[in-house]
Image 1 (tube, chains in turn brown, purple):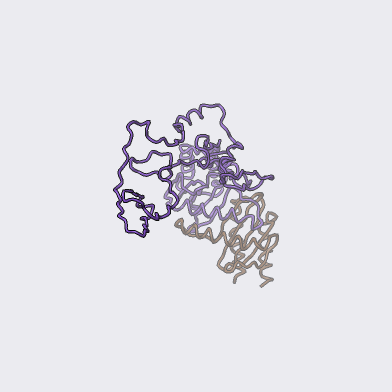
Image 2: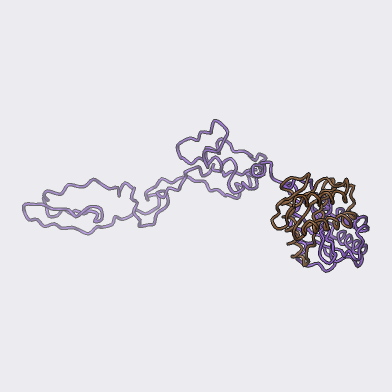
Length: 118
Length: 310
């Protein structure tokens, strides 16, 4: 299991490139952080919580949350991809275009998480 | 400015002596010399003659006990009221307290017309507001809590304390209160900004709502926005921004892209401290590149220009 998660992290780092400065993987059900680098132990559970808040807000707004959201922060952006079994948060720098993140990074992370969950 | 009660006319512990008030015509004055209680009389040992009339006040003095060896005839005559002399000068004069007639309104008018309005309690006012009639008020030697409610009343007034600058400065002077922002939002310009954004996104725009960040109330909408859309995204935005310091992440930026089902994208804008917005687009119609490169920056700048702090 640990080797599979390390392989997933390596795949994501390879696809995102130098823009990736931090990554965290956690279990979607319990928000328990499983692997990552450059983050604190509170990052995964906090992002898991706001993801649930966004899910609730989307329900109130008459829609349903998909499996990702991207939050721009000072100096970069935080990409959160939440799949049924595993979730991931990536901190990318400013040189990563948001369109590229939405079109390329999010599908790649989604596929990697699904592959690690099998 | 504090207003203080003027006690020059009615000093402390002044009261109206009921003994000085005019009494009803037939009322008895208990303190007058003629009705002052006399020491109890000794019973008459013997009465020499039967012509002696003895009269006592029936309520105050018990009936006389006549002890005599020989049987005598005692005749008690009914009380005959003394004939009052004519004229007011002949009536008994009582001590009247000289109280000058005072018009409260006129007194305040004169006081307001003065140039000197006290802003702090004088020592005389503090002394007059003391709670004890005889004991002088001793101010504390060191600054601290007031030792007497009278000092509080005298120094910051009664009834006007909430309007004084001293009171306001003390209540908001702890340093951790946030300054209340006053904003002027140009609603016609806001509507124009939304019209421009709608025209730029065309059919790809699903809904657009702008809310006030302090209250979460929607200010303007486009598309088929539900009434609870603004409050829902407003609450989520607050949660996200409050989470960032706890997750050891930098402060929030301008955009928050939230993927929704059916290839829709909700973009939460943090364009201004007073305004928040949510743009929901259909990614099958709107290209992400043009949306992030031109439409959203233009909408952000337009929205930021509509709010002005003062």
